[in-house]
Amino acid sequence: VTNNGQSVQSIQLINPITEKILHTVTIPTSWYGLQFSTNEKFLYASGGNDNWILRYPILNNKMNKPDTFFLGKKWPNRISPTGIALDEANHKMYVVTKDDNSLYIFNIQTKAIINKIALGAEAYTCVLSPDHKQLYISLWGGDKLVTVNTTTLAQTSLPVGDNPNEICLSKSGRFLYVANANDNSVSVIDTKKNAVIETLNAALYPDAVVGSTSNGVALSEDEKQLYIANADNNCLAVFDVKIPGASKSAGYIPTGWFPTNVKVIGKKIFVTNGKGLSSM
Image (cartoon, rainbow, N blue to C red; front, top):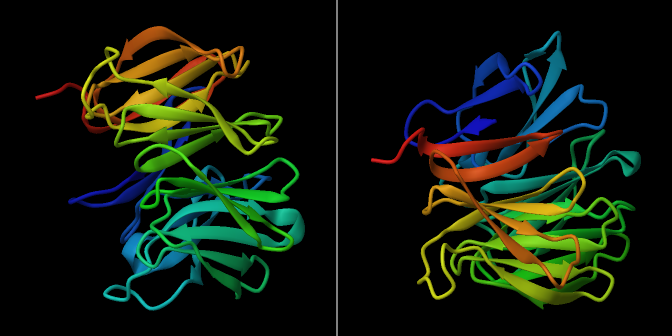
């Protein structure tokens, strides 16, 4: 878990079974972007306005001294990496940015930048398809989902909601869910058709004004339920998504103050609350 903001910024390594904090390290700057290597021996973290990716070796349940992947010089040079995706079989790391609106592709072994691709607007995160042939990018400032062919680097785009942020991909890679923070919604995408098949209204009632700030999304392990973090409603919206294209609202789960992210591990739902355990 990254803890970002005005005070000391940190990363915490947590055992989700025992719910115990194993280790905490201070990170100079950070924002969105965390990814474990497949063997879980390394943790990659976006370094925010320091314009680098930090790679922490995990040894004996501790994060050791990191090495770095440089995107460029530090602030005021405007880059700011956000989401990270790893293709370790092909020795590649994909990093998107929100200040220079780009996709950076690194060689993991040499730490060199292989490619830099303009995206046209601020990016939030990126997720690889299971076969690693497609990279899905939420274009936060462009109200689009961009798909990049990882072989040809050709781009296609699909309009979604306002300020798309976190992405959740089904295990098969067929269905993709992207939360749209500025219009209380989640776009459900059939990746085979490259089409939005439905838009879920995550707000507390059907004609609610903008303001739920839907900014996190996760599937249950059996992929029958979708959990949506509504930061400004202090809750998770829950949808029955057994039949994509015919989803149904299942209600809400109260959270702490300003839930920013949700993850499901087994039968447990973990929620990060950006402002505390209860609202003001």
